[in-house]
Image 1 (tube, one colour):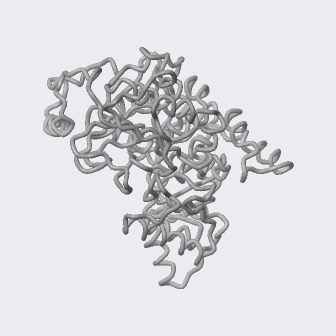
Image 2 (spheres, one colour):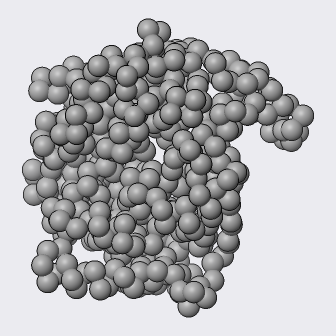
Image 3 (cartoon, one colour):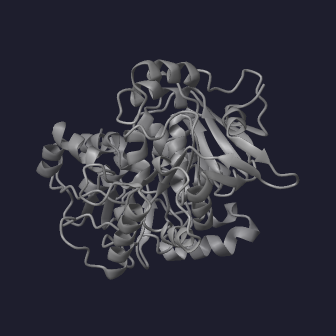
Length: 464
């Protein structure tokens, strides 16, 4: 019996090249301003039109400022990127959700919330975190710029089929433990290369009980374990989330789609190339201490002692700690922080803002902390205000910025200064990722909120 990955992949195979890649049909291409310009240039040089323009959706997100979006972008590089996408989308007749449009936001937040990402689809974008869309039960993965051009021209891509892995997480998550903590735990166990060459299906009690927002966070971080992508078999939670969204099937089409989506699961006797099982009871709120997402600990644990690191990894381990200003064996609880960032395609959804607000309610932002709270889309921003979360956050001394990728990566104005510590709900803590010399500690919205009101790394369970 086939795995779910096999089912979706096989349904999209156009042809298999002998001793070569598979020509795979792509249902949806997302384009943002950073990885699309060269693809559009290539199309123009060859005098090509997009083969299926209706399947392509464009929006700027990486370079958009998170304040004064109604004014011209000050940074010339960012302005050029954003303006170029707008012109290219117009030239090729593609749907474009520009800055200040009610539909704009981070592409990996907008796709699912508009019902553009649907179960059983193949979805690509010139962005590694395209794996996010796997949460709806789609095969979604990041591609390079030359491949973006390939999909524009033919709605197909040449890909070698990845191996399959199932990660099962059983049991029930404890208080204050979120999908972000689950993902950070998996990365610490598997390392950042442990899933290389695999497409991961997430399963088990924990995943079944996760909200769609939680699943989107989990799938978003698949890439940080080296996986080609990650996904969750669609179920009632998925269908409930999709129903009634703008691009979701309606009426009879909905019933037809639903009948098909209900077949999208791995068979009881499906054989995976690799199976791994974890227990929820082993996971507590987590933080990273190093310069890759796999260098993480439970919030009550200490940074690993030097003698626990193998010889081959000692030099890079010490280099990483030196960059972060931490010592082997050090406990990080109580360590002062300078910045807190809530947002990104990892944790910029409504559930993340609810979680953050639940901790800061009735408290005040710490004086030593600069906090950037950035919704993943204008739709999230509207929901924050409809639910009155903006009043809770403002009363606690926080301001909500405008949607965009913001401080996830140093491509816009929101950069963490050198040497400063940032508790960030984003996906990467590489050297310089949030700004040259910035020190990033990855965490969940609950851990971020706890740090924002105490001014230091704090176990959120003590405030809940």
